[in-house]
Length: 191
Image (cartoon, rainbow, N blue to C red; front, side, top):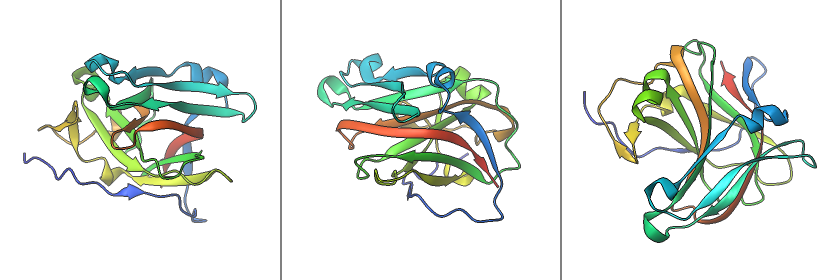
């Protein structure tokens, strides 16, 4: 195995083709789904960033918000949902229905197969949310989740196994510092 290239594209919101099929994995319009996420911020490394996922009654969806700070070796905030997910190997990629008042912020979709959950390995794909006027659907190909990493460093391990999905989450990390807010209605897969 060779170390994969760590440069990843930033995916943008895009139009949805009529022939695409969508399977929701996490519907953040349900407060119980939002409550099932756990928060992992840079405090695990001594950092002081804060963030989390809350249900907004006003917006009727989950809002991932907080502040990314780089003091004390910090620089990230994340929320993750572990669960029993369907086999998604026949799908092309993941989608996120979201919007942000600051579309200059770059977020990450973070997914793990069951083995990656047990070994603290992440597969990340960066994306920019649509602007705050309306929700948009960001499409992230499975092929972009090809860089296994642990604590921000590439590692050697087989590709993510989409037939054994174990965790799905969102992350924001430096250089996207300062206050952030991402409204999310749904995370799923498409083909």
